[in-house]
Image (tube, rainbow, N blue to C red; front, side):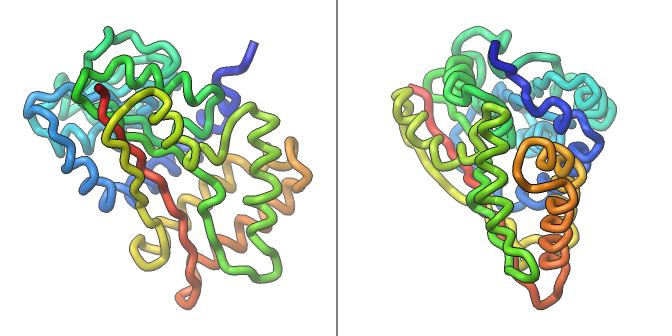
Length: 271
C-alpha cells in the first residue's frame, strides 16, 4: 500500500513550525491580493486543507471577517498549536483532524478551498485535487500553492546549488513517491478535471521583495528538517546537503547577493 504521508517525519519536526511561519511571512503579502480577487459571499465557508499551524487559516479569517474557516490537518501537534494561537477567532475559525485524501465534508460545501505547501509532499496529488474540487460548491474557487523545486535559483560559489535541486530532488521524490515538481503539472490536472477560469500566478520570494532573514529562515528550516533524509535517500551526503544549504543561506544574507524562489499560485473555478 502506498504511504500517503511519506514525509511524516519532516512534517512533524519542529523545523516545520519555523518553516510555516517564515513561509507565511514571505508569501502572504503578495498572495493576499490574489485572494481578494475571488467573488465569494460575505459569509463564505472556507476550507484550508493541510492547514498546519494555522498561519494562513487565521489570516483568511481576518481577511474575510464574516466567513467561517475550517482548517484540517493530520498532525495533531500542529492542530493544537493552531487552536491555541487562534483562540480569539473561535468559533468562526476551527481546526479538525482530517486527511486531504478523504475529507469529511459533503459535496459542494465550501465557497473557497485552499491547499498550500501540501501537494509536493504527498503521492497522488491528482486524487487530492479532485477531492478538493468535490467539496467546493459550483461557482466556488480552488486556491493552490503546489511547490516546484525547479523554481529556486541561487548564485554559484564553491558549490553549484543546481546540483542539489536538479540531482537530489528528483531522486528524493522518486524514493518517497512524491512529485517535487508538481507546480508545473497542476494546470493540466485542473484542466483534466474540467475546471474553469484556471490561472497561474507567481509569488516572488527573493532578496528584493522579502526581508533577507525571513527568506533565510525558510532555507534554514529546510536544512534542519531535510538534510538527514537527503543523505539517506540521495547520492548527496548529509554533510554535503548541509554545505549546500549553508551556502544558499549565506547567499541570501549577503547584502550584495541575489536569490529567488518562484512560488506558483494556481487557482480555478468549479463548474
